[in-house]
Image (cartoon, rainbow over all chains, first blue to last red; front, side, top):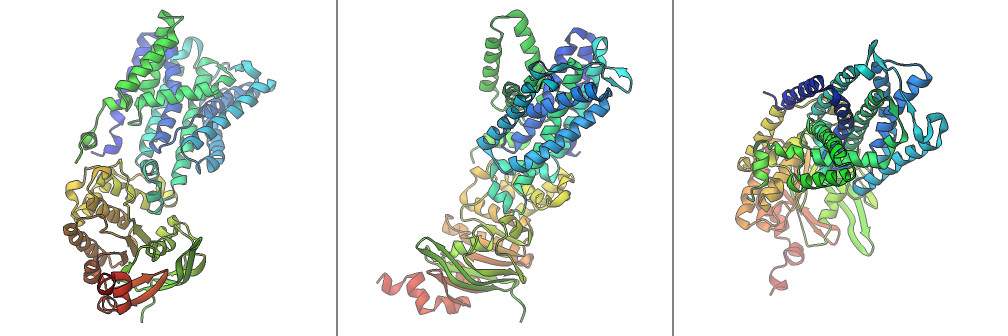
Amino acid sequence: MNRTFTFLPPLLGGAALIALIAWFLPSWNFVLAIGLAKGLPVLGLVLLMRGGLVSFGQGLYYALGGYTVGLASQYFGLKDAAALLVISAIGSALVAFVVGLLLSRYRDIFFAMLTLALSMLLYGILVKSTELGGTDGFNVHGITLFGIPLTGADRMNGLLLLIAVCVLGAINLGLFGATAFGRLLAGVRDNEIRVEYLGASADRAVLIAYVLAAVMAALGGAMSGIIVGHIDPEMAFWATSGEFVVIAILAGTGGVLAPFVAAVVLEVVRSFAYQYAPNTWQLVLGLIILALILFLPQGLSGLVRRGPRAVNAGEKS
Amino acid sequence: MTAPIIAAKGLRKRFGAVVAANDVNVDIMPGTISGLIGTNGAGKTTFINMITGYLQPDEGSILLEGGEIVGLTPRDVTRRGVARSFQIPQLFNSLTAVENLTLAEAALRSRGFAGFAMLPDSALEKSARATLERFGLERFGDSLAGTMPEGIRKLLDIAVAMVARPRVLFLDEPTSGVSSEEKFPIMDRVIAATRADNMSMLFVEHDMEIVRRYSDRVLAFFEGRVLIDDKPDVVMNDTQVRTLIIGEEKAHG
């Protein structure tokens, strides 16, 4: 059996589980949807982190995805979710490719700061542009999928579409991890000199990962826009990007399922904390994150230790 | 007579007041193994660094099978068939030996759009384990590269370099920092692999016994120049080499 596909059963199982929970507890489907929508940018971030890179600006593409949906439906009357998702993905891939040509030459804190600066640039533009809704953003109405309503009373349909997008995104990145470029990322993190002396381009591997991460973030933003029915500049704000980083650290770099688990868990914890400790919920959230980092330094994916690697890591030979 | 696979002509390189290469001319013939000796600062590593694109010479040309490679990046030089190992092994320290070799294979296959093709784990691991066996490293397959003994790291560094299937291989002190009883087994493995793949190889070495035993010809560098370039016995018995480089008799008197 090929190890490349071992992520599939838990992924499909997880997708079915979320769908079942939402079916039996319809009041939770909004929280689940927010969590999954955030899981997509986190999935991309985790890919970058495999290459040793942290982007503090995935909000850039989250907002691009959201605003693509908002603007295309508002000004061009495009209401079909499939078309909107495809446009979001292609648009953000093009932007990420151009931006990535510059960014892929940087590493570490320089990469992180540049991604942050670029997302804040978009935030600034969105806030100042009244045509784009200014600080309030604007509402997104009546998006359908081939005529099937996705919002309001039919939010369950929207959640199912989101689950499908998440599964496809996870499969996509799972398979990318088995390609030559995907495998190179671990080398980029560890020793770039050796990568170059093996005749491979570290920058190109970073560029490809960056574009993939951007597409994931844009799909998340687009789905968030469709399901929440509202977009605003906060999507590009640094705090949004920072939240993605926190979730990515909670998830760890071990797999394609962990980002969604971490994002959904955090969202559920947040909504409980908000409900039962309305004045101190941020403190509760902070403590839980702190505990997770202390006791699960490799993130949630550290819970599932696999193969000889994990045994060997603790062995000093 | 066949054409050289590497022809370095008139290489010069200065670092401030230090002249690391002062009109270096070296031809490497296909399928030969060359030993490179010289005192510290004689320009041995600078020579390898210039050929593999890490340093650009101030003057001179380096032809790889007739094509100029001065000005190319390490990546492009490697793609044209020149690989190297390092005095301090350049491995992926947080990965296992198998993963190091797997990554090297992925790097080889990441050229152009082929990099988007999926590489099955099983095939990669099989070829990685075969490589380990070839170098006698099968016991270390699942050990982390960062925690291995130095001799094993040296061998793995060379094994990783050879995954790129080079035609010319440069080894910078393959046995330095390795205990004397480990040196010969390391060289035996490396030479066998080099010969089996019909590669040309040049290695920098301080141990004269190693140089004598494994080289087809020996180059002696001194103060950025090629002092002598001949058969091992001739070089080892050369008066200048004995006094300036091997530093015996009179010098230690």
